[in-house]
Length: 268
Image 1 (cartoon, rainbow, N blue to C red):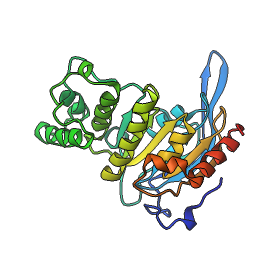
Image 2 (cartoon, rainbow, N blue to C red; image 1 turned 90 degrees about the horizontal axis):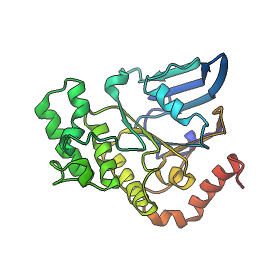
Image 3 (cartoon, rainbow, N blue to C red; image 1 turned 180 degrees about the vertical axis):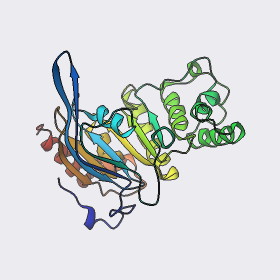
């Protein structure tokens, strides 16, 4: 595993006590007398406040790794530790999830969709609505609180789903190809929006993508997984200026990072 931890003074969090610690994580699915190794030997530390891009080919176990981190699946081998010595972690309460489709309930308004996790967790309704309105403002949906999902574009629906993932103030946000269904121009805009939201919220985010450029543009760190079963090919810091604009994609440094990933995935 390669890392540039010690050399980057801009890193956030306490590397001696990371928020997420994975060591030699392995997951095997068994069905019909057969075994399928979905994840094999994944090791990484994630500091509080990081935006980690998780990139790799289809079927390499990226989504399985997210489900393990969400507490939906147990690892078969290895160590999974979430939380620090100063902060406990409860999967149902401390995780927000964003999927490829926004998955908004069509019979609920945007505001009602955003407060849904707070309702499920039994959080006070008034405070939840206030936070939901603040989050909708943050993601650029002020004035759309009483609209229904069909009245919003795909990109706007995904903004609402990001607000929903944040409404119960989780410590960790897991995002599984959230912009994969969007057209190219909307996806570029959502990348910029995602960086702005991350910087404003200071949340720890793990962002799964198939796009190498998206992984580099969004990540403060990047984990590269090989074709299934997922192994850690590399895990490195992305040292690009913040706030980032689309112009950074034209820089030599950006190109160096993308070439590194192409090489790791055997695409050069």
